[in-house]
Image (cartoon, rainbow, N blue to C red; front, side):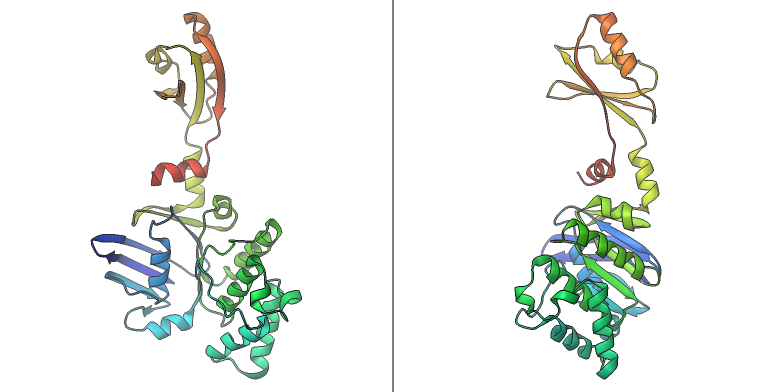
Length: 302
């Protein structure tokens, strides 16, 4: 389990992380989202013992990151955003070295490396120098080292960066498998990954936690209203549009498009078209916009 309470990290006068609290339990895959500079990587570095907090507490598998940093690292597998690797080492050589750092030895170490090389799709690349690998394969090496000591908690910062679509599907499946009996927290900018993998999502913006909810609830919020965009020639009376049955809000944009927000599942396009004909308005375009997790993310972080 990961337990974060009132966590703050300050640089000078700026709070990179601003009094956030959340927990993540065993068997839970949690997506950690936010714009660039929101505080995701800082939070992850604190949770893995790489950075000290300014205030608040972080416990990983029952160990405090400040007072029991080494114990925390024994229980955490970490893939940072910028994957640090020894480029002059061979894949299997590097993984055996990392395993030895974690106390693995002999046949047990070799078996563990062989198993992980297969699971992360590195079998054909294991006898190459890391420096000769593509970015996607280097990312796989980083994921393998994070899993090598079979940690209770897996913290992954942009784990699918640089992977092609097939590789992304394979890594998602691996994360899904290991997430059955571990705590997994991963950050991503690919929102479909959240719906594909996560049971829960955290959204951070300007250091503050702005959402902590099951993915299903966030998806329901995305479907919480119907949005129709209407383009007219000239100015129209938006007050009349607002009086249409089911319309909750009308907004005229600077581009000359009128947005109508209506009750979920209600298609108001026919009513808009009839009103335009009655009023003699020239209707240039009319379409129903698709609401998505991207729209909710933008709303929460703008």
